[in-house]
Image (cartoon, rainbow, N blue to C red; front, side, top):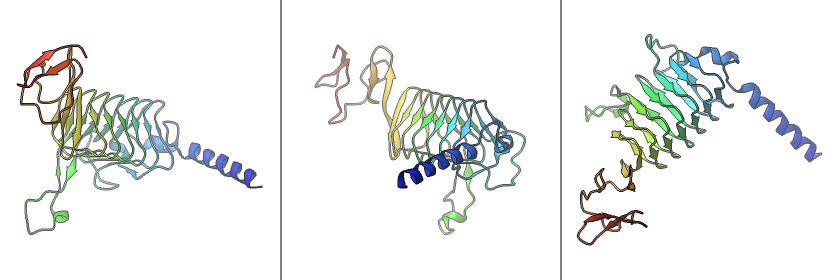
Length: 239
């Protein structure tokens, strides 16, 4: 009896997930400014509103309980253009939040782990006597380059511009501009590795051409293909 009941529950849940998913062919899909062919918002769905200002590209999968919003709340007129744009062939991990008010651009083939938070708005702290939550927020556009990967729990703050093919480490709090092919980690986040053709992945204290930059930090691990001598000179070599 328990096996039969369990089978019925799992089959019922699978049917419910399929029926509750939002796709271009479902009624919920028509509310979006654009929901590309093969795109899907998995059920159960998080808080989603402002669909008229949200674009999601083809074959993008939005995981369970992901919240995507445009504006402060439902029913706000945000103008003629889109606010949140997610490219094609992306995967947005479960429990994430994408909260747009002015402009969030996520490129193609961007993958995020669970519980990633991306926003283009934050409260200011101009008046030290007024509660921060009562001070009017400020917007600053966010761009995440195509091919990037954002690890579990990463926070992308207003004004961030991440280049193409970047990695953001789990738990990083990211703000600022980061070039293509960067590995970004920490609180606050910084570039911990960057890719240089012919030299591979280098730490940030080495210049883009592989020549020495700032002194090597104590305990910095060796980088394959690069030898760091005692006087901080750098030479090419084979691992």
